[in-house]
Length: 153
Image: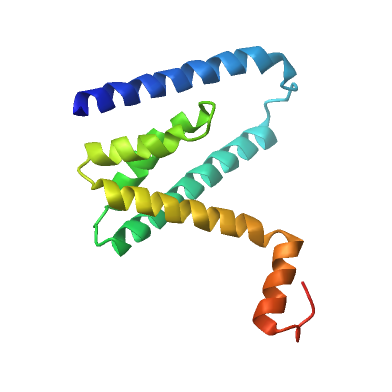
């Protein structure tokens, strides 16, 4: 069973890369031309740094969530597992990176239940954060929490 998960995970990663390459080739002509100068290179480097920072924050959040299950997950290992699973999110369906997190976590000796629970909590936090941007949700929260004393946001 372990070998099936391992080879299945590798197949999904390869399928993700092939899908990305084919999609890139299909839409390459749609990418506008840009000048390679100091400003564009610094923008690219800033973007890369920002993505790495976001990945680091996501890894740290997972470490904290796993701590809630009394599992000590080193930051570096969390970063590796999330990094390996992120490529699979580009497969159609947007669920394979969750499966990859599970298979990679199991590969590094993490228990199944905390991985699933922490991933579910993380998803709920993301959905809740996104919902907070909705004016209807903000209005409802302000009315419920403040009993209408404070006007809606």
